[in-house]
Amino acid sequence: MKVSYESQSKEINMDVYTPSKEGRYPVVCALHGADGLANNGYADFAQMLANRGFFVCVPHYFDATGTEYADSATVWREYLTWLQVVSDGLDFAAQQAVADGTRVGIIGFSLGGFMAITLGSRQERVKAVVDFFGGLTEQTAKDLTHIAPVLILHGEKDDKVPVSEAHKIAKLLESRGLAYEMKLYPNAGHVLRGLDMMDAGQRTYFFLKRHLADGA
View 1 (tube, rainbow, N blue to C red):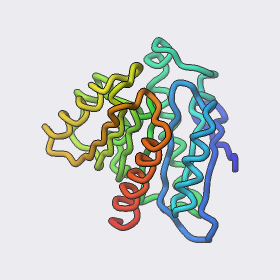
View 2: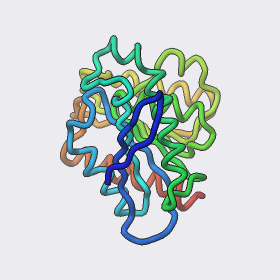
View 3: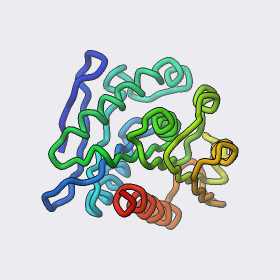
């Protein structure tokens, strides 16, 4: 289902996926990468999580800037705007009748992974962060003092966001005494596919269940 909310004086679309049974469920915000929502895999992944007891929201944060594809220059020019759009989207999602706004997780893919870690380090309401082949901005690395448990998933042959970013996140979290898990896929590039994606999907589900459902 598609809904909308206002942020940065713009109307922002959001796809929402809800469990079939009535109730209040943990909120999971899924953030797309630099290619926008052209990949149908985002919808399939969100629906999978909704079927397993999460209220999943996918904000179209590019709506705020009229972006279709974000190159590096666009990313660093608009990054803070998109962060605010996603934060406003979380506010909106948490107010829905089906949502338990005290249990919030963020999943980010590529660019979305950078944003997920940034938001997770700035907002106490975020209780779990899943980073799919994302990384750390210099400012986030500099400012990070606390963050909810992080699951890092990355292909070792990634030619767009090198696996060194995953190691950088892990090293920083370890130096701060912060909880994380990491799974690297030896033969995977920038996008996980096939059995690698199935494994990552299972890890994501059990990680979110542990920190948002069982551990709430």
